Image 1 (cartoon, one colour):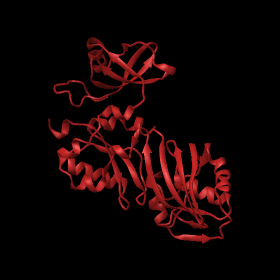
Image 2 (cartoon, rainbow, N blue to C red):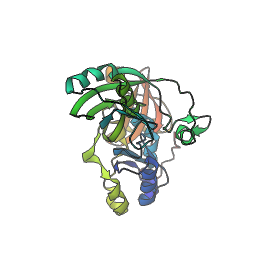
Image 3 (cartoon, helix red, strand yellow):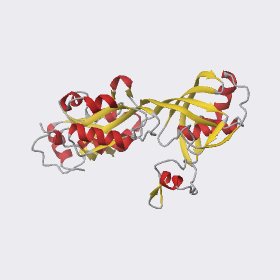
Image 4 (cartoon, rainbow, N blue to C red):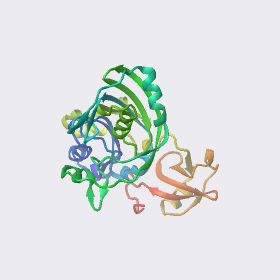
Length: 307
């Protein structure tokens, strides 16, 4: 099977100094596949898990981005920088109050749950057609509307003043750098990220991952052996299994009857042909499931057009 017709998810451990796009380009070059994307930007100085979607699996990017993420962050208190991490320009320093585990646990409580964050200037968000970090590098600052994000948990892992290490579980769109800076302000001394590791993305953990250095050095077939199937992007989803006739209709864009209704009233399901074979994402409407995203890689001769 040619590389162009293969697809899946390669979970990479990104090294410090690389951008997320650097990893995309590396995988594209090593595997000889044009359609490659990532699910969730990591700052260049950050390390850790970066799921890379390959080929038809790129159609599932929006669903994979909905997974929660777990970070381990080392924080330096008593310093404020323009980038909100220690790679940036120091704006001010301040004495650090007495810090212990109990005080930090109490300080983090207001940041757990549904909170508001102002996106940082040093981010990949767009403003009038330009990335915010491009404007920031020119010394410009533009208004940014607060965004609602979900922080599921913050635990204090270690305290070694003026540093502390936290484990943070958060949802889509949350900025750990902003959370750290806001925590520093709540303590009256400021704070910046010293070291950040993404330890988990949804079901993907370190054991699934290939170091970016290994991606750069490994033969293509060795890397393909580490590629997870596309449906790994939908881990934990309810599954609708279709008989051959219904599966053929689904692949031609038709809504088909599928029972039972997904547990918990889920709107979207992973659709499989019986006895096996992942077809894509279906949306339940009135007891029927209609195609939301169809994947047709790895099915030679398929006449189904991309969804």
